Length: 216
Image 1 (cartoon, one colour):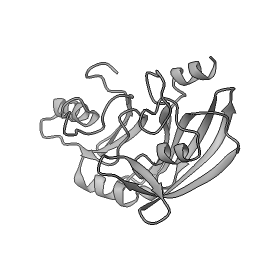
Image 2 (cartoon, rainbow, N blue to C red):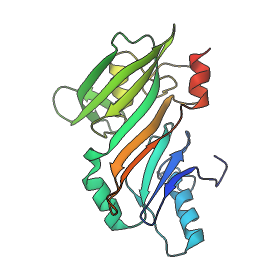
Image 3 (cartoon, rainbow, N blue to C red):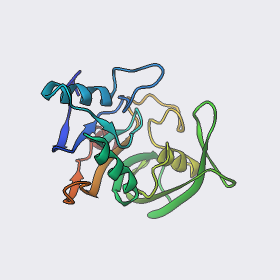
Image 4 (cartoon, rainbow, N blue to C red):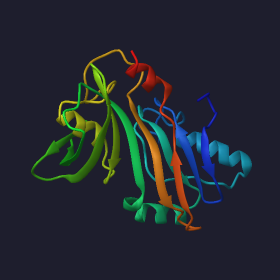
């Protein structure tokens, strides 16, 4: 994505859906305020009308690419978030090593340290549920189709690392290596429109760098 170019997948009066590139924050943090997807979407909407606003519905990690929804008013945001567990969200990931199982469900309770490191625990924390199917295996990697039932911070990354199949390029929870990105892509969304009640479904292609890595 060029400096201010948005890859808009869908837009109407109430929502806008963007294909977020990797290496871009969804929203600002203590170190960065302006170079975020939220800021870029806000500028885009304000160019149309200075009174336009944008509201965060959910987030993707800095190094994760793919589909992300923004609301254009607080009512739409509230309805989406209240029904978020009904939104079908799928990811594709390339992980290190050959997956032993063709499919499985990963469940754990997640907690976060003061240094923002998320980890699994059997004691307390927030329940995280991740379902995966193994689509392809090579000598070094496996391609997974992932559907999450919960939206905990870093849950896919942590739970795959827990079973010794960390996501390729994950510098926080994975193996060391010189990869230009983390190979996690939010490729699918299906939900009922919060206002019009229309059934909406969106699916992205496999990123070209995923195919390149699998064919190396």
